[in-house]
Length: 236
Image 1 (spheres, rainbow, N blue to C red):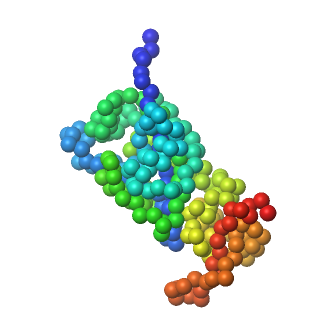
Image 2 (image 1 turned 180 degrees about the vertical axis):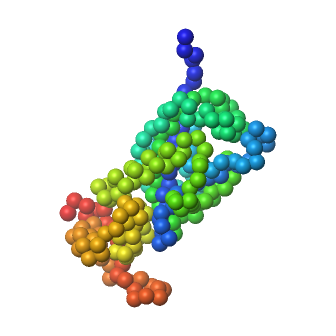
């Protein structure tokens, strides 16, 4: 006979940020608890928590992200659900859960959201059970709590698959950007090189990439022309 068990539902947010130094992911550090089981080295994890009984998934993702990192107004897109019965059963994870949840032993199914921001426009701050929050280069991400490495990999796959078809690359760029910045972003996310001349030729055919009568300021090299994204022109 199967044992009855309450199911909990959570959301986890994989927030990618981009600047000229590359693509990063936002991680929180678990706040140290007064619990000898937890140990001296709390894990890093994605921002995530249980949803409230009366809220929808998207509202939960927005709330949880704000409560843990103080970020709001972030582009968020649901990409996958994770329901392995053992995803929160590792000893290191259960010990920490006992310090922050009233029912730490219960099974948790989580819905993953990926978020996109331009790093220069957002300054996250730790709150709630986040002892710290920081942007980490994707190549430098180590072992994370729970199954968060798997969730991060899934979010990266979704970002790569949707970058062009959903026109979401512009969520990672400043409001005004150069074509070099746009090409560098594509190369970093898609992990391949593009011919500069062909890339620019293709971009200039896109009516939603609007040339501005402005150039970069405060740069050591010859200032490049700036462009902006106009979603109203996507169907042109």
